[in-house]
Image (cartoon, rainbow, N blue to C red; front, side, top):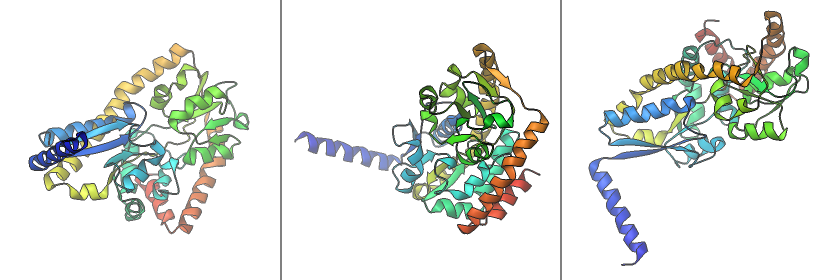
Length: 334
């Protein structure tokens, strides 16, 4: 028996055994390294395995299956069963959820981010939007408000943002461009390289990403309370794969989401943020705070115009854009 035939027989036996045992194995595409941003996925995999006695498992791959900007495409063709992506990477592919990336929405906690994301995910227009990619939204990846870390002279006033090159995506990038900054939408993995090479002078990230991607190793300042917004990075599953699960497997998956999310938020607040503040002191990073008058200037220049444009553009796409925006505002109690 030649090696190729032998390998095929072994593979066939393995598949047969797995089928007989009722084993289900999903591949999960994320990126970077394990960090606060992926802890709900890690916890979900753990819970699902426990609840199914190990018969439903998830292989979580950090960059081995796809580029982060191509994860939605991979889901659409069934290259893997679950993935994480950020809406701002390809707003044209998922316009409905980009409402959650509009600037200065006033989200103040991770719990609020979870609540408002879930409200948008459950809207029929959002479900239909993602269905175009054979994707079902499973859970968000709540992030605190982004702030900007950079090198060179820090922007202490609105005028100082004029000409500042910044890695920023989605609504945050749009908002910063309205106050004169020059946003560049490189991926999170390329951000530190862009800073080192001088392509950008600053980077807009949530705290965990500033730490995970090495930004704080070189940053000289950080905008303590600009809080221009955040990105929305859902976890999605391939709809065909979800439908192929047994009732018990589907119950184990969907019934574990809330617990995984609660674990994620606890991890972020009680582990990640406890490292953040000491790191700023250790590295001697200057914290730039803006008074309420200056923050009001930012909101006036950026928040209203970006939201109005988003509503106009996405209404033209056929989305109930005003309805989605109003859903966000009402869910937040604004």
